[in-house]
Image 1 (tube, rainbow, N blue to C red):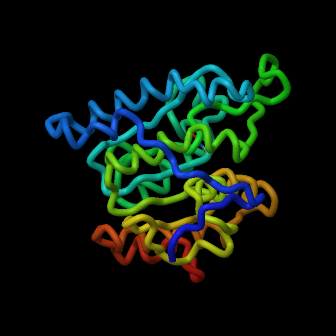
Image 2 (cartoon, rainbow, N blue to C red):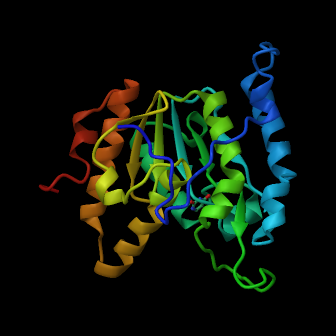
Length: 245
Ligand code: URA
């Protein structure tokens, strides 16, 4: 299935402009992925479209992980802890994501982790925000969209995992997680899976004392991703969250 170029609110997602980090990569083949990513991060830091919105906080949080990763995880935007540490997915949701990555037999340093929006969205005037977070708006994601697109072009992952519908919407893919999850789709030449955001799993866990059903669905999605990139899956891994446990 190909991605559709509009947001859930009907706002068309315009084609993204190439950034200089990717625009001239054809003429500078000797630059490493790390160098291209570093340049892109500097561009994101100074992003005028993002800064001009006035709705995003000042600190830019780019990405973490291996530029040669097979698997790229994409979330929505940094939260309070991510802003403090300037690294994606280090707060409570990030700790759960790290456990998921480890359950796949990988380390955080072996995958690439990023967000569609590179700045923590402001709440009210952003000064007294405390630990409150919110999802980025369509406009905020559009302002940052060139960076995530460029990262994908640089990393060339063998599988992309969108964590939650905000992340998939940020790539121009319409639909709820309920509709999009459970399969690998082809997106711009990349196998892509959409699954529930770890924050949602934490909320479900708090609500009904488990959220086991949703965890099982996420794990099924992750096994599909493992198969896609050729990672072995042991019987023990196949048994995680199985109904008999
Ligand atoms: N949630 C996200 O989507 N991204 C982060 O970096 C942290 C929490």
